[in-house]
Image (tube, rainbow, N blue to C red; front, side, top):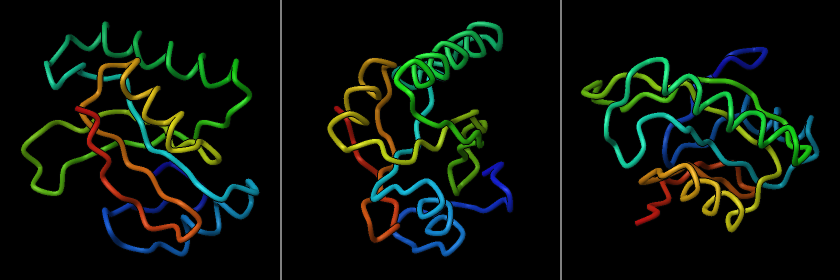
Length: 121
């Protein structure tokens, strides 16, 4: 995560820096989402970058913060994808955005600040 200070989100693990960030944003939940590689189909860098910029713009229009980061699978068998941590994004809205941007899954955490993998299809 490119937050200040930087930190790593891990599925199923509490993170104090993540909890601190949510507290600073007065958020009781948060989502981590990307627009890269819809339905896990690799796209070229220019298309992925354009999609991510549109996602970030959509979040800004909604008045939601976007803390940039890079999503990586723990096994490292898929390239890292620029992503956004969105404090305050409800699970329903996070699912809707994930589906809108054709993602298979998102990370979402409620007030316990433990991110969970949420499958979308």
